[in-house]
Length: 146
Length: 146
Image (cartoon, each protein chain N blue to C red):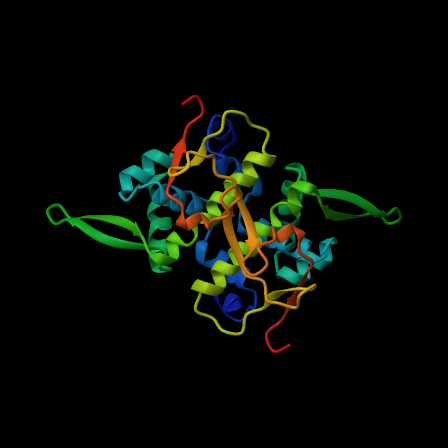
């Protein structure tokens, strides 16, 4: 999706996906959410080719989802830390995982637990005002200026 | 992300993203959620190259997010209808749009309204049991067999 087209697009989903980039980027964000910050951690965790990882980290940094910080001067070494924008995407990644658990035909999957209660976490997308799951709401799209 | 690696992966996020494919596929699902079913509707709505659209529709159909139905016999014409699996992904796409609204520097974006109440919809990912937004919960990852 090319940039000039996107900037004129009134759909926030198109803007979001242009900013995220691709599914590899979501996997990088997933690992960042679990504490990875260094190139080698991402590479080992994802089994991703170094040249692809370099490009995706640069794109996520340029788009403000990750922030590059120097952690060693000699030799120069940088790490990648989630920004507020990047952290705010993590619940969506968890919701994608929930969908994967419900719909992909695989057993023995990892899951998340609420540290406080010990209960297994089940991610649901709701509407903040009504508290209702989004798939139970009859929705209408409003274009800007309507 | 190649298939043999994915099938042995215990992470439901990896399975989900392998099933979805890429960000174009999410845009196709978005348009399917707004009622597009025919090749020409998707092509016109997304401004996507026909060969890419053909591949993505075939992949989404093979993965069970869309179902191909013949709507005309002579000439043969098919349409693509969301399955339960595909429909269940739509709230996530709305949540991605919410994130885009909050974090992408663009004004005049479209939005969704609750038809029943007339109120603007704001998508939030929560934990079903506690009802708390996912970003406010301290989480722990549990691997299968732990």
